[in-house]
Image 1: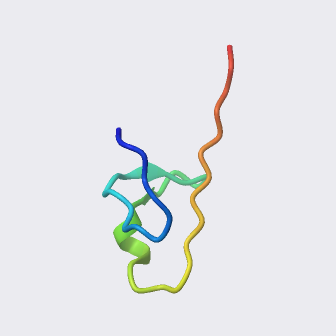
Image 2: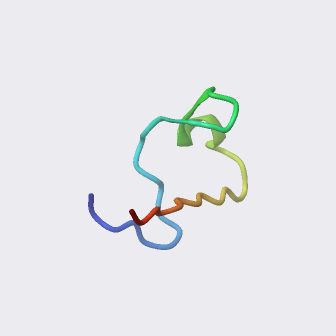
Length: 43
C-alpha cells in the first residue's frame, strides 16, 4: 500500500472497531479531523 501524505484523502478500507462494528473512512467524510491509529504487534 502506498504511503498516505498529510492532508490527503484516506484510501477506502473497512475494519472492525472494538465493538465489532465495521468502520470505514467514508463514515467520517465531511468531518474536520479524523485520527487513524494502527497498532503493530511483534510476535
